[in-house]
Length: 111
Length: 114
View 1: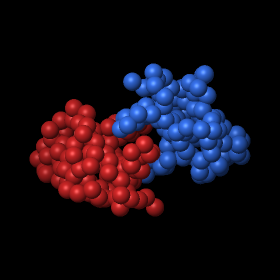
View 2: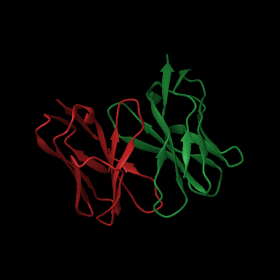
View 3: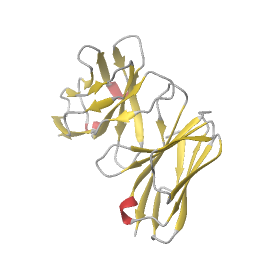
């Protein structure tokens, strides 16, 4: 069992759809992250929120829009995605100086 | 900036044999080092971490790693592997400074042969 919960586990969407990925943690961690992972590759950092403020945006296209409504929740809003955006999207959280705790990810397929 | 190199993309090993997965890093500052494991269709799980102190670090599932500053290495070892250890293993590094990013290696696929 993971302490970081991601929903949905799988998502298939068309290029004109709008969807959202959700992430929740109740460990009191104040940093939350979105990573993108392609098959047989390491995770790539997309966004970091620290104390509910966006602190890092790794030059991610605007069709990905993160949101941190409160210290326990992190969303990733998706719009007008491309087939090459198909990947495993991982959420993680951490406390300062501590390792990342990952969720099990959302497997996204863009058709 | 930090970087991390995992020299082996795949490592086949027979069940109950020992295994070593290699990881080398480079950094101009002190580092924190991590090993994560990813089982099929799951996220990454922390196996062990080196932050400071003893250079021999013990983790979950019988794994251990040794921090070697002179060789800038953090190799992962297990004396006897099981079929359930089949997974992708990622070495990661961050600078030992506030809010530094974690950099992942490319991963090593561990194949356990029956």
